[in-house]
Structures are given as structure tokens and as C-alpha cells.
Amino acid sequence: MTPQPLLEVRNLSKSFHGRRSGDAKVMKAVDDVSFDILPGETFGLVGESGCGKSTTGRALLRLIEPDSGSVSFQGQDLLKMPRKQLHSTRRQIQMVFQDPYSSLNPHRRVGVILDEALKIQYRLPRKQRTERVHRILDRVGFAEDYYYRFPHEMSGGQRQRIGVARALIVGPQLIICDEPVSALDVSIQSQVLNMLHDLQVELGLSYLFISHDLSVVRHISHRIAVMQKGRIVEQGPTDEIFSNPQHPYTRQLLDAIPASHPRLARERRTALTTPVS
Image: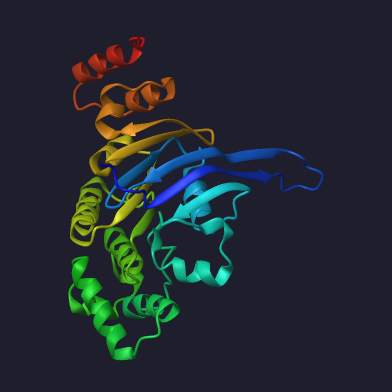
């Protein structure tokens, strides 16, 4: 029996108008997008840069106000919530951003950054907040002394772990990961992805994992949606998308994944250009 979705997105749309005076041009960044995310699932949203992936993620949290559609989290439509109720609901849905440096305040120590998230969402005594910060730092693989460090004293991978810790500290059920490893070296990418997987198993988290890199999405996702020009053109279980892509754009994305050997690249091109019956 399939569990009830944690998040249900239906017919989500967002357009942007030209910025120049008199410019009537309208760009549909997100066009009638629908998908579900199940409890404990990683749902990958993949496509080339500019296809509307990040706009979709921000629209779910109303960091960008969508034009139409519905976003139901645990049966409640986030797009119809008053701001006060939305603020408290955001404890359950957090976001990890692409750039781990610009998303952290460079003038504040790590402990203060994490403590601030708790002060905004919960009214806890200082001692309890400090203990919780140390527990979260330990969960993402940091020793106690990282509490006193500034973001500029850490590597990109370490800063992204702090981004994950900031999302985790308020106790969410769903984390929207917006290109969380694209700015990192390949070896560091795998460390962060493995950490996200371990946290998911340990805490029962769900992820919306946004990326332009199909190989990364394949590594972490249970199901994938392929996005092109603001629309989802194909979605399904990860293995099915990779073994039997139905849409030409999905085939193009798969063909763009670097192969480990020229012979494998030729075989893949042959397979991907064979018409689907």
C-alpha cells in the first residue's frame, strides 16, 4: 500500500515580466508543474540551467510567490496559509542553498548562525539552544571547536555541512536541496551526498533534490522528474528513467553524462538514439 504523500504539488505556475519600462514580455519559469513526495523519499528534480528547477523549489516555500496552483503539505495548502501560520509550518520544510558561502553570514560564528535559527523558530533557554547546536554539529561530522569558527575559516564542503546543519536544527520533515553539491569538488560531493543519505535513514527525512547533474540525482534519488522550459516532461522511478527514457529531452540529458570509456560512450549513444516503440 502506497503511503500518503508528504507534499503534493498541483499545477504550480510562476511567470516573470520584463524589467524594463514598457517591456510586456512574459516568461513562464514554472508552467503547470505537478508531483508528489512521499515520507522518507528523495525526489530528484533535474534539468538544464534556467529550466525552472530552483524557481519551483523557492515557490514551494513562497520565497517566490507563485501565480497559481496548490502546494499541500500534510494536507494543508501552503499557498493559502496566512503568513503567521506559514512561518510556523516552515519549521517542517527547510532549504539548503547552492552556494554554501553566500548563504551564511560571514560576520557570525557557526554557533551563532545555528543558534539564530532556533531563536527564530523556538523560544528555548540559551543552555538548551547551545546543547542542540552541539548535537547538530556532531551529526554533520564536526568537533565542538567548529562552534566558534567563521564561515571563511572552512572549506566549501564544510560550509555546506553547516548549511545542512542549519536546515536540520529546527527539526524538519522535508528539506529542499537546491543544487547542494554543484559548487563542490567531486570527492567532496560524494561525502555530502553520503551524509544526506545517512541523515535520511537516521531521521526519516524527505528531500526534494534539485540538480542539473543526472549522475548526482541518480546516486541519491528514489524517483526523478525531468524538467524542460518550466514543464515536467517525464517522471518515474530512478532505475526506469535511466534504463528506459521516454522523452527525447531525457535522452539528451543522459547522453550528456560523461562516460568512463569511449566504447561505453558509443554504446550509450546508440542505445539513446534508438526510437522507443
